[in-house]
Length: 231
Image (cartoon, rainbow, N blue to C red):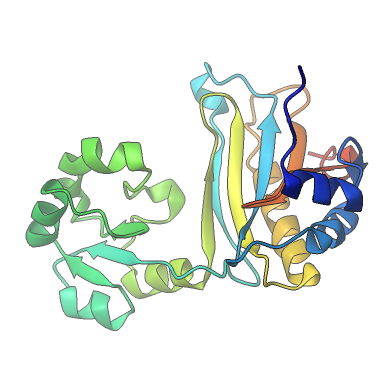
């Protein structure tokens, strides 16, 4: 017996043929017509990659600024001895030994952790706590830096990180339903380009297999291969 579709899915299916693929512009316009939830939903791109996750040199990850921001209030902590400087730069919390103890005791009320190079010598001991949550500072993600002000500003302005999971999928928030279609399309194109440029040099074959765009409460709309087959 086929699974029963939700009312929201059936409403969306009246707007778009969800079995088809669309250009990015068409997909964004269709998403804008879908029924909205009572909260400002996050808009997300979902990638399916063709790389081999068992090969260490085919891991895909990176960061990119969103030209129109993420629409999300990002809570940032900074591991540093220069607490005043970090707070002045816009960090929500800053410190080193005291902040590390607070986290060891179970506090994880933040979205991004930044650390200076020197602080990382101690912060590495929190890898078992922060790593599984995706909160561990990492040079490749731009979260290990000695330019605290620039690091905090970039994250607060809407820089997003993407990282492939063990099943070769990537999910990236690119804005909110309250954004205009043009803003969502611009952010989406930026992320697609960033993921495309992160293609491992050793990989041969079809890199990006599929991309879909959706909001928190909507079904996904598949993008046409022409939007990404150049990568």
